[in-house]
Image 1 (cartoon, one colour):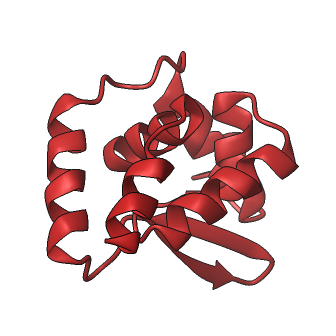
Image 2 (cartoon, rainbow, N blue to C red; image 1 turned 180 degrees about the vertical axis):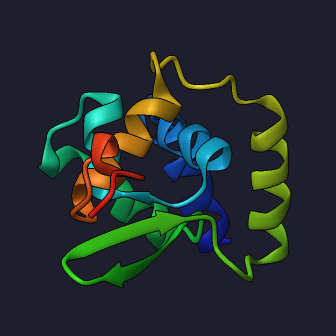
Length: 121
């Protein structure tokens, strides 16, 4: 019962629903992307992501200095059902030019500016 309460408590704040909507639409996200797209401070984003992780709604993985968050690979049956409903029901995040901004952030973070991609060496 405690895990179920933790799960639904994690869903009780709008920023966490926005984070999930973003992840369910775009896939794994770096903590800095969550901050940038939702206008959250680093501490607020970390707190919300920790709550979602503790509830089993997201899992994290480290790549160098970056930590990415996304839906769990093997969620519990309850978490899988909740994520399926959220995927269907949550509106798309209201982030202008989300795809382009996400590609640009990832290119810069990976050491390649978007305008350099495809340029002769």
